Amino acid sequence: MNLKNFINGKWVEAESGLTREIINPANGEVIAIACESDASDACLAIKAAREAFDSGVWSNLPAIERAAFLFKIADKLEERMDELKVLETLDNGKPHREAEFDIGDAANCFRYYAGLVSKPHGYTYDVPDGAQAMTVREPIGVCGLITPWNYPLLMGVWKIAPALAAGNTIVYKPSEITPVTSVKLFEIIEEVGIPKGVANLVLGPGNTAGQEIAESHDVDKVSFTGGTVTGRKIMQAAAGNIKKISLELGGKSPNIVFADADLETAVDYALFGIFANSGQVCTAGSRLLLEESIHDHFIERLVERARMIRVGAGDNPATEMGPLVSEAHMNKVLNYIEIGKQEGATLVCGGKRITEAGLEKGYFVEPTIFVDTTPNMRIVQEEIFGPVLVVQKFKDEQEAIKLANNTVYGLGAGVFSNDGAKALRVIKKIRAGITWINTYHPTYNEAPWGGYKQSGIGRGLGTYGFEEFTEVKQININLQVEPVGWFEN
Ligand code: NAD
Image (cartoon, rainbow, N blue to C red; front, top):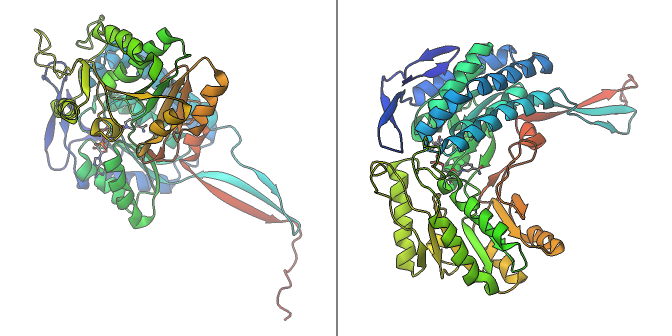
């Protein structure tokens, strides 16, 4: 597979001619060669998006016509499900069933925004002076979209669908590690006939191509999903022309279990919270907070279940947890496990790379659980982004809330309890943008997604996600057309 940029309606190599090998994380084999764009390629894409926006070829279309394109994209994603899920697994490592879920969700995200765009979006205001005021929502202009590798197709679609629905033109840069399904999506965008220059794809690294998108004065908005450190760089780069920015960043999300919870349900969701997608989820329930009285019994059951998770290649139907996305990322996760041991936490499950026959060339790490942690340990404070759970103990509601809020992040949080009032009381005290009671992880195209504190700025998905790609214009109409009379002569 040879993966190219899609700029101004054409498939092109990087100007430098440089390329990058794309690796299957299940066995280290090369699955594709992608062009390695730099700032000059990003500039070409930005220029195409600028011209397409300024021409009005997309923003002037009636909403219902833009929507028709998005509905077609959704249908084609589903038609190509079998091919796309195989490619997503090859590129990212996730099991087929997870890839299938992501692609279905991506199709529905296009449908959601196709449906939303023709609904009313403004207000009217009863103002003095015999005037009528109202607001309309307009596209922002050229939007730079930059995404990570953990949900290669879906993270892009969460931005592409609302940005296009709102009438913007886009320059999309997926993670340089996982570009395959983004290229397939742009094949579909070409196939359905979206006008040239409206949607542009640039494959390449963040510090060159991505940085140019974040800095360019011809880009009006950057919507970024990725790590908090990169998010900070994006903010700085965006300052030059006061770009609008949306940031969906990292997390260290608490999953709190009270003694009165349904324990089997809580154990099941604790596993799902941290080991789904091999822990490479921004909202992963990576800190499990257990009420003291159930701690030992809960851990016993949790470890028993964690040891039963079938780790393997994503194309094996029996696999429940795949590899980590790259060798470098696996090494980062293994290093955190070493840090945890050195800090004095007790390892009760996993902790090693899996090297058994068949998996030895892939980047597989055992489901790992640490107990006996203290709040200031690095493994408790820092995002590991892998299958590593740290457990914290609490005495009562107040201590649970205090521990839950004790990080710089504020992305997700869960509470398990059969006392509904207590569960809601606790959730309301937690400084996080996405929260769950007696469940963990469900994500809906209809509902807003984003973080408090250093987990980000703004909200994706739902109506909020649409508004993030619009400007609000106030229109005042004078209903009594006569001179104002402010000056006497
Ligand atoms: P990353 O920050 O390293 O990279 C994300 C994207 O930014 C990539 O496309 C990368 O090429 C680009 N990039 C890197 N440096 C850049 C720069 N200077 N200028 C412009 N672009 C640049 O993140 P990652 O390792 O790919 O993904 C993991 C992170 O993503 C985790 O921290 C995770 O929590 C976060 N994440 C957050 C959400 C959310 O919704 N909040 C969702 C998924 C992942």
